[in-house]
Length: 371
Image 1: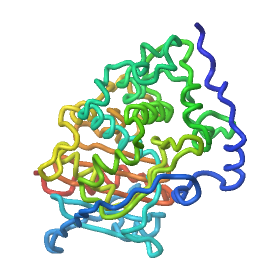
Image 2: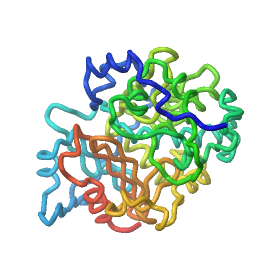
Image 3: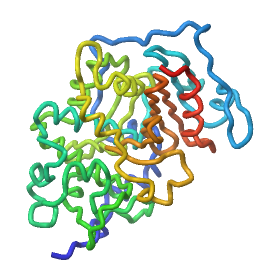
């Protein structure tokens, strides 16, 4: 049967009202919309701190101009900046009206956290495999072409979903960001008329994974699963929020998790630990290896990314060759992980601030001694 266009999902009155009331999305949206609260771990673990004489944060180049890090942070709309070296806090900076205990929205970095939850769900036997068809978990989508769509297709964003990622105020992406009935909109997604299975960055893939997780958790929430399986065992110091819709309390997994910089850095350290934290294996090394394996060759990589350091995409993680793993979100939210240098860098901000932060983070991440 011919697929309908994704534009058949009309922007709803609740979405229109929220746009008029609050305007476009900001890093403070978790204070404006419904959400599930995340408590700090009952056994919080503070980061150890490297002695000052062991830390050297270099100056770096931005478009031919040399900057000291503190000057760049203060002048380019940064809220928080954390560097973890060898499992300890090497550098930390906050804007004067912000602080280490205050969460802010990490936008599409949420997608990468969702990917880790998919890995945890496979480890727990809730999801069979990444090659399972999504209709095994969302049977409402059967008999409409979705039988050919796998969990891995959603993770790699080559799913053929008819979803356009742009800021058109009447488009599907804006509807997803503001809808009061997220499950209804996800189940209303359609496939493109012609399948080509190429990489297209689209939040609809992640939203479908979020609904899949919600279904397999059978009464528990994605937020509770995040807390129980990852944040709490990692000793999160602070709380957070995962924004939801109004009808079913379904998490907006692609965009709307709010965390502190210190707690976000724990996910980077988890990657460096190959999925373990202390004596506990939280995500299997096999799933992480698949997550960070380039899904696309250079000739398949979209022209839009050719001028960037980014070279491929894994399971909702961006890759810089075989050197670094990056999660990134709107307005300059970054989680950067460099395994060979044993470094994690987090940058949170109210905007990009006119800087290409991936290049800056990579300069910082590769300046530490190789381990």
